[in-house]
Length: 188
Image 1 (cartoon, rainbow, N blue to C red):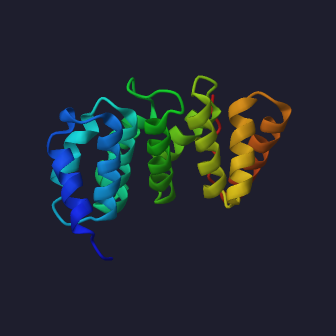
Image 2 (tube, rainbow, N blue to C red):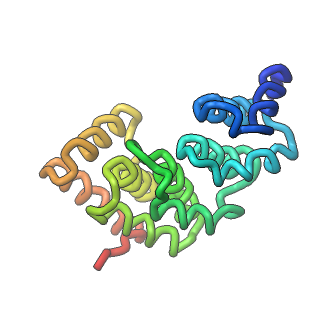
């Protein structure tokens, strides 16, 4: 992978003083850095896990778990962020990214992560976007690989009409596929 040094240097400049830049610029710098990675970038990114903007934190979490490390290294943080974070807003990017990481932990055999994933999916108190993401992750774990178009269709209805009959049918199908795969965990 060829590294674009000019983009990388600009990203590093921004990330050295993130409070001096608009959140969108910091977010873009995280993306630019992860597209042009080098060893040692983690020390620049790790403090951004405590940034006030959820989009910045979500992009940082992805970079640290998928570009510079792996989800197991950040398991405790992932478990915490998957439960929700006060910095999150609107589409809940931080919780949604943590749910994706949670699914990876579950796929690797982490039973506690799988249990939390089911709890978030089944809970009406989970916001619509991360709840839809949890169902998508569970479907994927159960072997029901939704196409991108199906994901868009299913997530839209799950977000817009979370208690509809159509959504309950989707949930039922995911539960049944999960039972066959041996990964269903009934919620009390």
